[in-house]
Image (cartoon, rainbow, N blue to C red; front, top):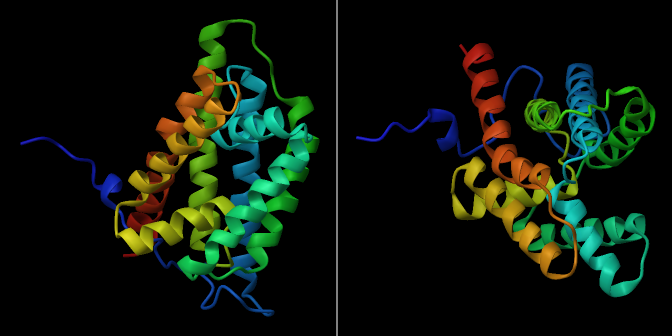
Length: 221
Protein backbone atom coordinates (compact mmCIF):
# COMPACT_ATOMS: atom_id res chain seq x y z
CA UNK A 1 0.00 0.00 0.00
CA UNK A 2 1.52 3.29 -1.11
CA UNK A 3 1.74 6.20 1.31
CA UNK A 4 -0.12 9.29 0.14
CA UNK A 5 0.37 12.51 2.13
CA UNK A 6 -3.03 13.76 3.25
CA UNK A 7 -2.33 17.33 2.17
CA UNK A 8 -2.16 16.19 -1.46
CA UNK A 9 -5.80 15.14 -1.21
CA UNK A 10 -7.23 18.44 0.07
CA UNK A 11 -10.07 19.49 -2.22
CA UNK A 12 -11.26 22.86 -0.92
CA UNK A 13 -9.98 26.06 0.63
CA UNK A 14 -10.69 25.72 4.37
CA UNK A 15 -12.65 28.30 6.35
CA UNK A 16 -10.73 29.47 9.41
CA UNK A 17 -11.00 32.33 11.91
CA UNK A 18 -9.69 34.92 9.44
CA UNK A 19 -11.97 33.84 6.58
CA UNK A 20 -14.39 36.51 5.39
CA UNK A 21 -18.06 35.39 5.29
CA UNK A 22 -18.29 36.77 1.74
CA UNK A 23 -15.67 37.26 -0.95
CA UNK A 24 -17.44 40.23 -2.52
CA UNK A 25 -17.98 42.74 0.29
CA UNK A 26 -17.24 46.41 0.93
CA UNK A 27 -16.91 45.85 4.70
CA UNK A 28 -14.57 42.87 5.13
CA UNK A 29 -13.49 41.90 8.66
CA UNK A 30 -10.22 43.52 9.73
CA UNK A 31 -8.64 40.14 10.48
CA UNK A 32 -9.43 38.98 6.94
CA UNK A 33 -7.74 42.05 5.46
CA UNK A 34 -4.74 41.57 7.76
CA UNK A 35 -4.17 37.95 6.75
CA UNK A 36 -4.85 38.81 3.11
CA UNK A 37 -2.05 41.39 3.11
CA UNK A 38 0.32 39.11 5.06
CA UNK A 39 -0.37 36.27 2.64
CA UNK A 40 0.09 38.43 -0.46
CA UNK A 41 3.32 39.90 0.97
CA UNK A 42 4.72 36.41 1.52
CA UNK A 43 3.50 35.39 -1.95
CA UNK A 44 5.40 38.30 -3.47
CA UNK A 45 8.49 37.52 -1.38
CA UNK A 46 8.46 33.94 -2.65
CA UNK A 47 8.26 35.08 -6.26
CA UNK A 48 11.05 37.58 -5.61
CA UNK A 49 13.25 34.80 -4.22
CA UNK A 50 12.63 32.75 -7.37
CA UNK A 51 13.59 35.69 -9.58
CA UNK A 52 16.70 36.43 -7.50
CA UNK A 53 17.78 32.78 -7.74
CA UNK A 54 18.22 33.29 -11.48
CA UNK A 55 17.56 29.68 -12.48
CA UNK A 56 14.30 30.14 -14.36
CA UNK A 57 11.13 32.22 -14.20
CA UNK A 58 7.67 31.07 -13.12
CA UNK A 59 5.47 29.13 -15.61
CA UNK A 60 3.13 32.08 -16.23
CA UNK A 61 6.10 34.31 -17.03
CA UNK A 62 7.30 31.67 -19.51
CA UNK A 63 3.85 31.90 -21.09
CA UNK A 64 4.06 35.70 -21.18
CA UNK A 65 7.49 35.41 -22.85
CA UNK A 66 5.94 33.15 -25.47
CA UNK A 67 3.15 35.64 -26.15
CA UNK A 68 5.75 38.39 -26.44
CA UNK A 69 7.75 36.29 -28.89
CA UNK A 70 4.87 36.02 -31.38
CA UNK A 71 3.23 39.44 -30.88
CA UNK A 72 6.11 41.80 -30.16
CA UNK A 73 4.31 43.06 -27.05
CA UNK A 74 6.20 43.99 -23.88
CA UNK A 75 6.35 41.37 -21.13
CA UNK A 76 4.22 43.64 -18.95
CA UNK A 77 1.46 44.00 -21.53
CA UNK A 78 1.57 40.28 -22.30
CA UNK A 79 1.14 39.54 -18.58
CA UNK A 80 -1.79 41.97 -18.41
CA UNK A 81 -3.39 40.35 -21.45
CA UNK A 82 -3.05 36.87 -19.95
CA UNK A 83 -4.59 38.07 -16.67
CA UNK A 84 -7.53 39.56 -18.59
CA UNK A 85 -8.11 36.32 -20.50
CA UNK A 86 -7.88 34.29 -17.28
CA UNK A 87 -10.42 36.57 -15.60
CA UNK A 88 -12.73 36.05 -18.57
CA UNK A 89 -12.42 32.31 -17.93
CA UNK A 90 -13.86 32.91 -14.45
CA UNK A 91 -17.33 33.47 -15.93
CA UNK A 92 -18.20 29.84 -16.74
CA UNK A 93 -16.48 28.75 -13.52
CA UNK A 94 -18.70 31.16 -11.51
CA UNK A 95 -15.77 32.61 -9.61
CA UNK A 96 -16.43 35.67 -7.43
CA UNK A 97 -13.87 38.51 -7.41
CA UNK A 98 -13.20 40.63 -4.36
CA UNK A 99 -10.80 43.14 -2.88
CA UNK A 100 -8.17 40.40 -2.84
CA UNK A 101 -8.36 40.16 -6.62
CA UNK A 102 -7.26 43.79 -6.87
CA UNK A 103 -4.78 43.75 -3.99
CA UNK A 104 -3.20 40.62 -5.47
CA UNK A 105 -1.73 42.67 -8.30
CA UNK A 106 -0.95 45.75 -6.19
CA UNK A 107 0.72 44.15 -3.15
CA UNK A 108 2.74 41.56 -5.06
CA UNK A 109 3.99 44.22 -7.49
CA UNK A 110 5.06 46.47 -4.57
CA UNK A 111 6.84 43.62 -2.83
CA UNK A 112 8.74 42.74 -5.99
CA UNK A 113 9.62 46.37 -6.57
CA UNK A 114 10.97 47.11 -3.08
CA UNK A 115 12.31 43.77 -1.80
CA UNK A 116 13.97 42.31 -4.89
CA UNK A 117 16.99 44.70 -4.78
CA UNK A 118 17.76 43.58 -1.20
CA UNK A 119 17.65 39.82 -1.74
CA UNK A 120 20.94 37.89 -1.91
CA UNK A 121 22.24 36.71 -5.27
CA UNK A 122 24.40 33.62 -5.03
CA UNK A 123 27.15 32.48 -7.36
CA UNK A 124 26.98 28.86 -6.19
CA UNK A 125 24.49 26.90 -8.31
CA UNK A 126 23.40 24.68 -5.40
CA UNK A 127 22.55 27.77 -3.36
CA UNK A 128 20.61 29.16 -6.32
CA UNK A 129 18.53 25.97 -6.46
CA UNK A 130 18.00 26.13 -2.69
CA UNK A 131 16.84 29.74 -2.98
CA UNK A 132 14.37 28.74 -5.70
CA UNK A 133 12.97 25.93 -3.53
CA UNK A 134 12.57 28.29 -0.57
CA UNK A 135 10.85 30.76 -2.89
CA UNK A 136 8.30 28.14 -3.94
CA UNK A 137 7.62 27.14 -0.33
CA UNK A 138 7.17 30.77 0.77
CA UNK A 139 4.90 31.43 -2.23
CA UNK A 140 2.78 28.40 -1.36
CA UNK A 141 2.44 29.40 2.29
CA UNK A 142 1.50 32.97 1.36
CA UNK A 143 -0.99 31.64 -1.16
CA UNK A 144 -2.64 29.48 1.47
CA UNK A 145 -2.96 32.40 3.90
CA UNK A 146 -4.51 34.80 1.43
CA UNK A 147 -6.85 32.26 -0.19
CA UNK A 148 -8.21 31.27 3.23
CA UNK A 149 -8.97 34.97 3.86
CA UNK A 150 -11.73 34.50 1.23
CA UNK A 151 -11.61 38.03 -0.15
CA UNK A 152 -11.20 37.03 -3.76
CA UNK A 153 -8.26 35.24 -5.38
CA UNK A 154 -5.92 36.60 -8.00
CA UNK A 155 -6.65 35.72 -11.62
CA UNK A 156 -4.54 32.55 -11.73
CA UNK A 157 -5.47 31.32 -8.26
CA UNK A 158 -9.13 31.92 -9.09
CA UNK A 159 -8.74 29.74 -12.15
CA UNK A 160 -7.26 27.05 -9.91
CA UNK A 161 -10.03 27.15 -7.30
CA UNK A 162 -12.72 27.34 -9.99
CA UNK A 163 -11.38 24.33 -11.85
CA UNK A 164 -11.01 22.45 -8.57
CA UNK A 165 -14.65 23.02 -7.72
CA UNK A 166 -15.80 21.89 -11.16
CA UNK A 167 -13.57 18.80 -11.33
CA UNK A 168 -13.48 17.95 -7.60
CA UNK A 169 -9.82 17.02 -8.00
CA UNK A 170 -7.31 17.79 -5.22
CA UNK A 171 -6.00 21.36 -5.24
CA UNK A 172 -2.39 20.17 -5.61
CA UNK A 173 -3.26 18.22 -8.77
CA UNK A 174 -5.23 21.07 -10.33
CA UNK A 175 -2.53 23.68 -9.65
CA UNK A 176 0.33 21.50 -10.83
CA UNK A 177 -1.61 20.54 -13.95
CA UNK A 178 -2.25 24.18 -14.79
CA UNK A 179 1.42 25.07 -14.32
CA UNK A 180 2.62 22.35 -16.68
CA UNK A 181 0.02 23.27 -19.32
CA UNK A 182 1.20 26.89 -19.12
CA UNK A 183 4.86 25.84 -19.35
CA UNK A 184 4.15 23.71 -22.42
CA UNK A 185 2.23 26.53 -24.10
CA UNK A 186 4.87 29.14 -23.28
CA UNK A 187 7.77 26.92 -24.39
CA UNK A 188 5.99 26.08 -27.64
CA UNK A 189 5.54 29.80 -28.32
CA UNK A 190 9.20 30.54 -27.65
CA UNK A 191 9.36 31.16 -23.89
CA UNK A 192 12.46 30.17 -21.89
CA UNK A 193 12.24 27.30 -19.41
CA UNK A 194 14.80 26.80 -16.62
CA UNK A 195 15.21 24.43 -13.69
CA UNK A 196 13.51 27.04 -11.47
CA UNK A 197 10.47 26.89 -13.75
CA UNK A 198 10.23 23.13 -13.27
CA UNK A 199 10.76 23.45 -9.50
CA UNK A 200 7.91 25.97 -9.36
CA UNK A 201 5.59 23.82 -11.46
CA UNK A 202 6.27 20.71 -9.41
CA UNK A 203 6.24 22.43 -6.05
CA UNK A 204 3.62 25.16 -6.05
CA UNK A 205 0.57 22.89 -6.03
CA UNK A 206 1.75 20.68 -3.15
CA UNK A 207 3.09 23.76 -1.34
CA UNK A 208 -0.26 25.58 -1.43
CA UNK A 209 -2.09 22.38 -0.46
CA UNK A 210 0.32 21.65 2.41
CA UNK A 211 -0.09 25.22 3.65
CA UNK A 212 -3.87 24.93 3.73
CA UNK A 213 -3.78 21.48 5.31
CA UNK A 214 -1.31 22.59 8.00
CA UNK A 215 -3.21 25.77 8.84
CA UNK A 216 -6.48 23.85 9.04
CA UNK A 217 -4.88 21.26 11.33
CA UNK A 218 -3.55 23.97 13.65
CA UNK A 219 -6.50 26.37 13.84
CA UNK A 220 -9.58 24.24 13.12
CA UNK A 221 -9.65 22.22 16.33
